[in-house]
Image 1 (cartoon, rainbow, N blue to C red):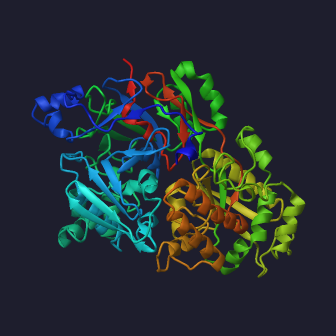
Image 2: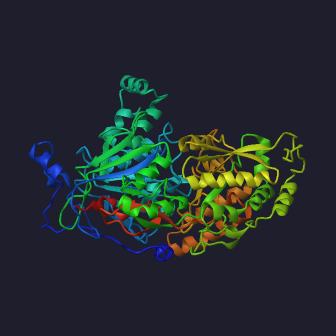
Image 3: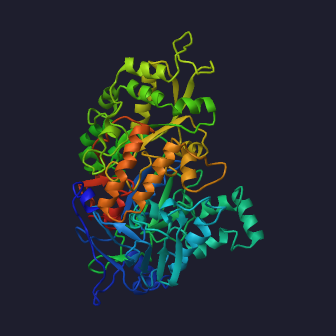
Length: 638
């Protein structure tokens, strides 16, 4: 992994693996007051035996409220990427190696089939209850292997087609066993995949689980919550099996291991979501001060991104790298730095593409399915896109045409996958669309389906990011110029993804992952999981689901999926590069989805009063910026 990403970033923090026996622990004044009042145990009793010592750029001081903005609906990545990244093991700030976190150490056997983790003794949830191996076993046996909650276990917990086993050795030791080598297991734990494992405090979650709760009481909770079943209640109060969603943030005081815990959850009428300091957080600085430095996080909820931008310009937002930080807004934010008392920082994207169009290759309408699965149709649409116009207008010239493919500085780079069908050529586009069998047109010049009906479909996009919306509106115009009657539908992200999940979309747009590390998130290269938005039923089949939501893919798609299994069994970086090459080549030949352009250099804003915030950061999902930079160490100057 080091050679993969060493060119991307610089180390800005270091992480210690222990502490001096003479270290004197300290806490925030607010917590000290609660201890004095008898409402909390002493800090020494709240910390684990071996708290994680994290050395920041500057040792900070306590206090302050961190103000941010979020959109309504499904914006839980705003939380995950700021503070909810606390897996068993984690990426170091440079994204070059995996370091201890909740697990203070681990052992792996020589075959890469067994992994033993040693948890921090005395570590506690935010309510003071012990965090133990039982919580991890509960996640596996009662969530991931519970068919009511999860139709199939996550693919990173499957090796050789067989789900792994999670074995409790003792309260602070847990072992993961696999039938075959799971070469990507540690990377998965350190990345977004691993966030689900530690999101299920057993003692709290049992009250919402059919296996443990009294049926009458559980039925009452389901009824009072307005939920359809105990599954919906569990997800709403605890968490989705994959670690996403608002469940883990929906209950005030819900036990967590994050630096901040929920005080004011999102509700129908809420204008903000508030998180306060976790008194049992298990990390300290080199002087013994318990993290986090900042007292409180306040997310204002905005329906209008323009209103959020105005708050930023006026200095009423302390840190923001989502939603309004578009290239078109950069000039106004730059010009108002003095007024708002903030500075800009760079975000170096490791995504593969700024805009990726996913046509639904498993469309429920057999005619539309046949059209979308026709490669000539997808090629025609790709060559009809005027990428230069989009780049100049939406990305102010700071990009270049690109398909959904690893970037040139990635060891996984495949030239064909990255550069094919990028030329804007209306004549070629029409030739390919004709070749796809769409030669008949109506009186207005719009193409007809083979059955003679009008060829019309909708591409859906989330209300944010705005650049994707703007790009989609231009793509719609480009496609109508070659006789494709398509409409853009802009909606809340949660609604869009629900429709994607149930296979009810014609198509959708999002950005592309896997620009540098093509292995950790190959969603755009073949249907592998819940983000392979062009073929969710094929991805479900690949993950072992055999119900109505799954569909066996064509032979050539199954061949790509099978080839990726060799990547998963490769325990070394060199082995993963070698085994991923044929996967990417087959992906290039199939051409699953349509990319627009490389991701431009991005930016965010941060208050001049906030310290320990680097001026340059990686921008990714598997490396969930800025959380790996230890946001609990950010602090305010007096």
